[in-house]
Image (cartoon, rainbow over all chains, first blue to last red; front, side, top):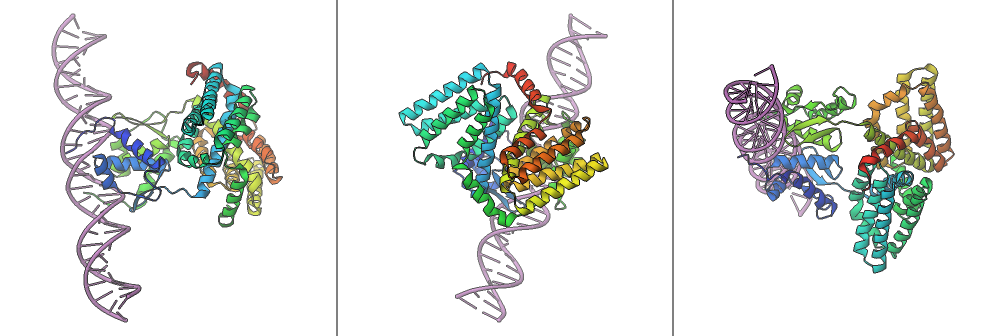
Length: 225
Length: 225
DNA sequence: GTCAATGATTTTGTATACAAGAATTTGGAG
DNA sequence: CTCCAAATTCTTGTATACAAAATCATTGAC
């Protein structure tokens, strides 16, 4: 019998699935059986299907007609592409933030930066991971472009699991913090160009050379459009 | 009785709804009644609901719980924000295209540019509208970043209806073509910085001043985050 | 022993039934 | 006539039934 759900179940469904995918507890390529999911969440297939469709448009899930849903695979190529776009968007956010930040924005940025500094000094990578996110959110906010902020946040979330890898690099925390310094200097100096460059370089993986290389590798097959 | 649908109905549903919204035949704020839509498409509510959910994640439709779906409203503020992001993304695409375009890309760009020239000379605004789109697609392709190309295409489609307004401006076609010239020069010269600037300026509405103004207007209410 | 074909099983896609919240209408009081 | 409240109607949200495709297993031939 059509029972009613405890109100928040609707959102919980999608968020929990999304989270499971983003945190990697559901691995890429894994099949998402509607019946199992329905049983696991204690609902019927209907809301599960709707959640899956939404996750599909969000790019987290791939649905092959009549063949079910799987967690979307992210090849290294696509991953690099996404980091590239992320770098571009962050750059734009930085440029706008430099031009538009208010006094409140400035203070929020400095606070976030200070929190990062303390995490570095404490050598606390987890804390830095968190405060780094806050720092970037503060930049989005200072751009005074809500749509841009949404796009950045979504991509940020999407790339989160892969960013952990980056942190493994030797001294990444110290380097990252130094880059933050350059970013915040440029923003406070209201130098849009410099802020954009600083942020782009901060986000991009190991400089553009790697991305160039992968993109041109793939060019052989994809070729002229 | 659960009938089977003519295969392509599934995609037709979403595409037709999406199209109706993007072309403006469904106006912002309009209610999307599930039963009416179901009747109109000759299906049950189930596939309609799934399509609506997808359009919701795509940002075309707004669903208030228990209160149905309406075509998403786009305030001028958000619109300006989206144009700003579009400009940023196109800029990145231009930068990458300048660095990465192959010989085939170069030829495709020149062909698209030439088609634009002919439309201008013929004074055919509709043709220019179409060829302009091809020109931009060629740039996306030349960036050799499929994810970026998708993002650009999506935003492009989304902003299409509002771009028509821009074309009303005096001599827009001639100005636009001149800007294309600058873009293509920079790309062929493999000057990423210049290509990025040229494209950004090409896409942006009336220079940044307007966007700055609107953003700062809104800053009064949204304030520090 | 391997492979192919056919039948059984599983799983997706759609329709429909029903429950509960929202909108609307009607009836009455002031 | 206007305004408010209760009841009716409408619409959404979920569960379930059923059809058809896809997958899997079994069996038979080579």
